[in-house]
Length: 200
Image (cartoon, rainbow, N blue to C red; front, side, top):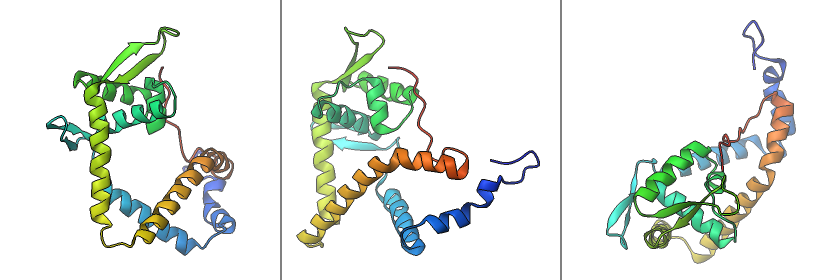
């Protein structure tokens, strides 16, 4: 990103002009959107060490394990075989981090890991009864939380917000790889690096 002298590369120096010329929407509106998304994430995101109370289990479970179990359930629902690699891809984390979280979840009785009989290089993960209860309770609690937060909104406004969020998620997923390629051309480096793939 810098030359031998430490000065910014030409592409980086030209970034403000290149960006301003390529924005199809108002920069002010996009800045507001960016700040709103960051603020929303700060409000609702939990640190990975936080715990979520799970009524069915009579105890709290670390949020990272909750997210991992929900990813496994999502893969099952879409008829995909949940492997460590697949769960890591869904959550956009590197393989080694995901392996540690899943090992902790297995020790906690939430899932079981087995070798794939068709490909011994792959590790399959399956939710236990407790893991399935965790997923159900986690989803129930989030729905309750959203209902409380939006209790003074009209039903039509909640429906519109939901539609916009669904559209935004679909757009971001569809455009992610394209924007990565464009950033490499414009900036000379990958703006959105992918987590490392360390196994199966």
